[in-house]
Image 1 (cartoon, rainbow, N blue to C red):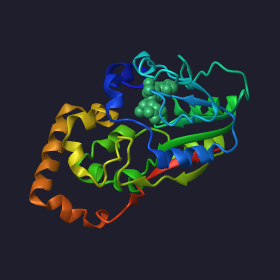
Image 2 (image 1 turned 135 degrees about the vertical axis):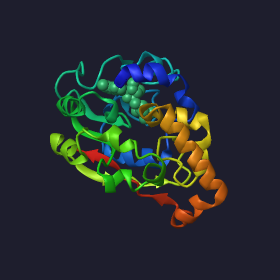
Image 3 (image 1 turned 45 degrees about the vertical axis):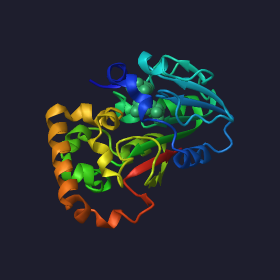
Length: 248
Ligand SMILES: C[S@@+](CC[C@H](N)C(=O)[O-])C[C@H]1O[C@@H](n2cnc3c(N)ncnc32)[C@H](O)[C@@H]1O
């Protein structure tokens, strides 16, 4: 399952752990430049929507749309691959932590490029060294993640499709938005079911792999093996885990 049907199934508890991380938001909003009108594609519950600009949201999942707070930007039920807007009708289009859910991310990015003068996308590296092996959770506990991303367009292909440059996004150790990499310095958080339910990766790999990974992490935290292996992370304020902005 992918796309909007996935979020109609797993999205009901999204806001328990998912919210705007202010330091990452500042980087996204800086990349939007002087844009006054902003389209937020795959907008979910409205995280990262700048409050000082004229925002229109696009979100295909009814479960996610229903959780947008009162007073949030107007939200249109549509998908990235077919944006119901005229060419160049927004100063900028943004997409946060969503393009890996789109059935055709390149078509969606081209649509963003068509309807907006500037495009800003938060996504991740797709190469083994860039993402999978850089994060201890995927490297040591969840090798299955490599299969999840196999066959998806690479970051280079995504960037090339819209002529974007890439910018690294460091993840603060106390990241407020509970996405997959957010707890890199707080490993015990991944033992918490509420935390895992806010990350679609766990649904993607399935319950058997999830149980095995959680058991193995719990054992390594108790024995001190995790701390031994990841000693170099403990003093870091922010980590480079292959998260990227695409800016076009
Ligand atoms: C991880 S959530 C991110 C939501 C929001 N951008 C945020 O940062 O909290 C991914 C979102 O992408 C949406 N999505 C899935 N397929 C999509 C598509 N084809 N076009 C646009 N959005 C899509 C899902 O419904 C879900 O709300």
